[in-house]
Length: 572
Image 1 (cartoon, one colour):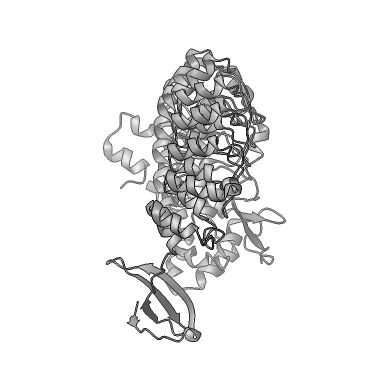
Image 2 (image 1 turned 180 degrees about the vertical axis):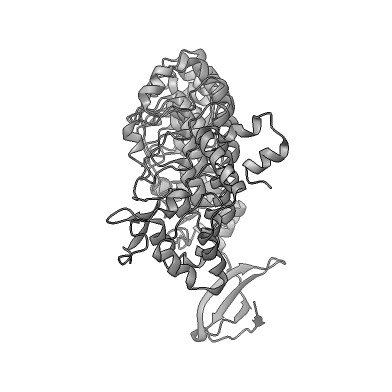
C-alpha cells in the first residue's frame, strides 16, 4: 500500500477516509484516491473541554470554579456523556456529589445508549458512586437500550457486593431485558451460585423463560454450569422439564458435550428416553456431535425400543458425521449395523438411503465402511446400491472393499432402465475399476446382447443427468447405445477390448462395428471378435460360470496351485 505524507491533501480527490493509530501512538487519517493510492496526514489532536478534564481527573477545585458559570453543564460529548456520566464512569464520587448538588435533575439522565449514571457506575465497578446515587434516589430499574437494568449488569460482572446493594434498594429481580433474560439468567450462565442465592432470597422466579422459552435450569445445562445446576435442582427445578421443542436439560447437555453435567443429571434421575419433537434422544445428539464420553454414559440407560421408534439409529448419525470412534463404541455395544431408517426419514433423501453403510460410502469414509461391514452390514440393502455410489465417485478402494464383502456387481440403477450392468455405465472412464468389477463377476455378456444385432439401429434417445447418474427416458438402454454417446465414445475401443476378456464368443452388432471402424487403432479390437476364443480362455469362463457369482471370492481358498488360482482371477 503506497502512503505519501501530505498535510494539505484535497479531500475532494478522495473516495474514502480511514482513521488509525501508528506504532508510535500518533493518530493519523488516510485518504484513498480514485487511482487506489493512499495519502496520510496526522490527525489533529482533540482537546477536551476544561469541565470534562476536571471531572475525569477528579479536580474538585477546578470543577467548583467552572461550575460558577454553569455554561458547560448541558454540553454533551460525542457519546452523549454529560459531566454527571463522566463522573460515574471514572468513579469520581466527590465530583458526582458536586454535580448533583448543582443540577439534581440529571441523576437519571441517559446517554446515547440509554445508560443512566447509576448503570455506568455499576458497569465500571465504582461501588462508592453506586451507593451515593442510590442514596440520592436514582431510579434503580431504568434499562438501557436493550432494557438491561443495573442489576443485570451487576450479575453479568459477578459483583456480589453491588448485587446485594441493588437488591437492598429494591431492584426488580424478575425484570426481563429485550431478549427476555432476567438477572437469574445472567448469574446462571456464569455459574455463580452466590448471586443465584441472593436473587432467590429476593424473590427471583427460577423458572422464568427468556424470549426463546429457555429457563435458567435449561441454560445451566446448556452452558455446563454444574454448581448452579445443583443449586437449582436443590431448589425445586424439574430435572425432566421439556422445552417447547421437547428438548430436556439432559438433551442439551449431551448436545454440548458437558460430561460432568450429564453425569449429574443421570444421577438425579434424568430420563434419557425423553425425545424431542423430531423424535431424537440425547444419545442421538451426543453421537451426532462426537461426544464419546457422553455416549458411553447414555448407552446403558437408553431404550432400544425408543431408538427403534425414533426411526433412526445412532449408527446412522455416527456414519453421516464421520464420528468413527463413536461408531466403533456403538457397534461394540451391539447396535445393529443393518438397522434401517424409517420410511419417513428415508424419504428426506433423494436417493432413499436407509443404512448407515450408505452414509459411510457416500462420505468416502473407508474406515467407517469397513467397521460396519465387519459388523455384518448388508451391502445390498439400499434401493440405490452403495456400490454404485462408490463407483460413481471413482473410489476404487471403497469399491474393492464392498465387492469383497458381497456387493452385487450387477446391481440395477433404480432410475435408469439398462440392458447391461449399471456399474459399466458409471465407470466407463475408469478401466482399472471396470476390470476389478469384471473380476468379481460383473456380467460382461450382457454388454454384447443387442436387439438389433446386424440390422441398422434407431437414433439414440436423449440422456440427462441427475444427482444419481444418467436417467433414461423411454425404452431400455443397450450398451452399444451408451458407448456411442459423444461423451464416452472415445473410450469405446479399450472398453470393448476389456469386456471381451470376460466373455466367450460374441458377435458385435452393427453399431459397435461402426464405432470400432471409426478409428484405425481399434481395428484389432474388431478383428479379435471375428476369431473364436482360445480353449484356455473358454475353460476359465466355464469354471467361473459354474462357480457362480457368490462363490467367486471363495476360489482363492481352494487347495489349488497358486498359478491356477491366478489364472482363474485374471492375475496372470
